[in-house]
Length: 384
Image (cartoon, rainbow, N blue to C red):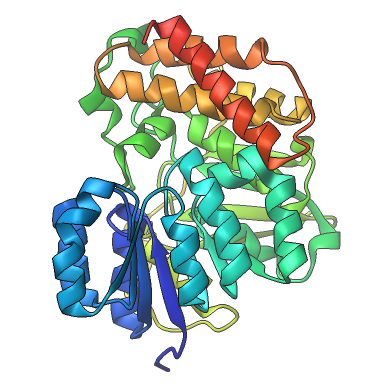
């Protein structure tokens, strides 16, 4: 295995994607020269002492104060406050940045990474959902490449290669989440713990709930449309419970290319770092004999209506996908806090999305205002 000479910035370093990125960097012997996180003092402190990065951004001011002496002792330059990630990346100038920050909060760091880093490994799908045209425009402006880290989009990226003009459609696979085969009436009383029981992946609680509602797959349809310039009607979603096929690409001659591996986020993370090279990984081999079979089914859009809602938001365009995502973040947060039921997520997100004005997403300011307004409307409905 060839050791990597790249430098790496990890945004959202204390989260699920961030921690797995650090695992990959350790295995591949990649130098992490910058990390960023919010308020997780314990894990952040451990990472500071273990990685000893040159730069660290901590958005929570109180957490940054608690770590200031530690950072000085290690020799890490500490940044804190609202613009800390932009300031850190401007100094770090990392070869690769993995953006593992969750939600709309990851948008501005995405734009900063495109400005200051040579490559962006993008795990923050919300950046493309809310501001796809702006993100792609910035990448073109600065001559930077975006390598997708979502397992489905990494799979599509691999399968397409340089043959984008020969593609007939994309086929995104979906595990079905924690409540596969349940009917709508059965979902009214499900709990937070039940929603967190994903059948194949270990992820953060917000994305796991999004998988349970199938909103995550809806967001991925929008992300795929933005990344690969593909119209909504040419993006299929298929239930695949085993999570071995991560996505497929159908070509104009009706042949299908698929990427298969055991479900392990370290694999697309490593590919985003090593691309165009392919190096050995810690992901286990697929044992096809033991696996026995691969199964497929159509998604149930009656019990899980947010997938269809996301498709409609994509067709309407403008700021509507941004508004839908904002309402979803509010509703999922309320569900995780025990303030609403599972199917109430559907009601809030559907109402805000269907009633949101389809203005053009013409600037970052317009998108930020749409996000704020959609959150306000969602909170008003929930009386938060």
